[in-house]
Image (cartoon, rainbow, N blue to C red; front, side, top):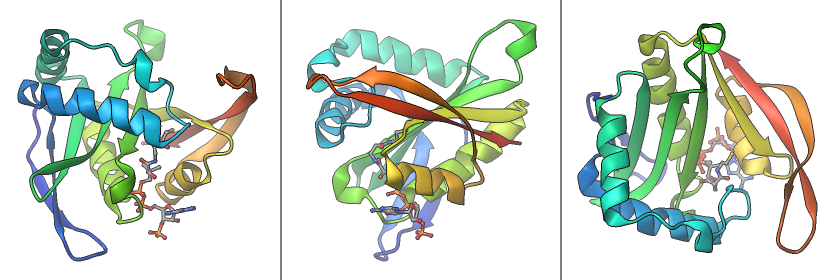
Length: 182
Ligand SMILES: CC(C)(COP(=O)(O)OP(=O)(O)OC[C@H]1O[C@@H](n2cnc3c(N)ncnc32)[C@H](O)[C@@H]1OP(=O)(O)O)[C@@H](O)C(=O)NCCC(=O)NCCS
């Protein structure tokens, strides 16, 4: 969906703009997915699994922009992409129409500046506006920085998916299930 850009001030005094991700961001988004996947082990994809073509990514971003039930938001600092976050419905069957899921990742250079808190605050407002009744997410159980962010933003733990992920080194990792009621 389209939504108004919002300017925030980061902990280091810089300005940051939260705005809809658009098809013009395709190249930057592909680079972002590859690099963030390399900077943290806690995202679903490995860098070599980011295989979007420019044209394919353009189509995905245009579709999300025009979808009144999905939000994709980029955070920009000094004209550079700092991160991206989204909420989207988990399905189209009536019994689950009240639920959306949240995803967020920032470049490491922008961690700890308050961008995550601001993005989730704005996404929460927009999810409520769309009519969702709750936001669901899964987070790797060792990802303490993300868990701290989610707790701060009002998410509570509702369960644990044991051995949800297996990394390339053979190690298994649990996921925590978290929910925020809107
Ligand atoms: C998780 C992530 C989005 C957090 O965003 P952020 O902008 O760094 O978070 P904020 O600066 O808003 O910090 C939010 C809270 O997290 C906590 N926090 C921040 N840095 C932390 C750290 N290094 N360790 C533990 N907690 C930390 C603090 O409680 C902070 O609240 P405070 O500012 O009131 O003290 C970001 O670290 C990231 O992109 N990580 C890699 C990708 C990822 O893990 N995504 C989530 C997948 S489920």
